[in-house]
Length: 235
Image (cartoon, rainbow, N blue to C red; front, side, top):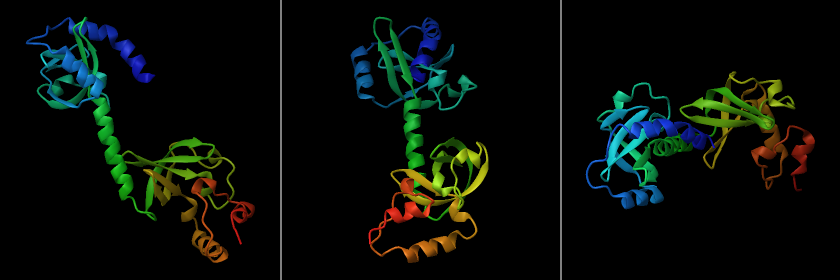
């Protein structure tokens, strides 16, 4: 929805930008439409700066790349892209209007996500890291670990003391120290409770109390009361 709103807001700027240049060479609109349908990654060279964006030639058609579609962050100086080779996808093809819109952000997001997933996969269970509370939900707190990584501290993992609501003990922006307790499906499960004094004794007590064939419940199902712990035990 945000992309659609942004595109609508840019319509006038895009039309004005296209009025500043004309297509050169033999246009291949059918090929451009194919690129759009197949979401093909194209390497293009920025050969011009116009109002609210830059332009590049693709298949004989000069395409417009809005400033908002050039990078994941804000672009302060479009001239820094002049002559630079970048990867883009075809976002819009309109032969009747002679309009070609290109975008780099989708590929940049995909690359950033791949790098983030790789960093998460390399994270070892037991690692202790510093982070900052990013957001609070009824079921826990999301912690920003930097480098595009974040993880969840389930409400049951905030403290050894019973916590009814994360916002009762945490606030957005608060710096915390957490321990990685699970890495699964590209997600990090974190714990603050595991770093509290006496947490190791609790762990030993729990391990010696459970039958050998007992399977630990998923972290999201963990509770802090004795009743919830005993519920899953099959003797």
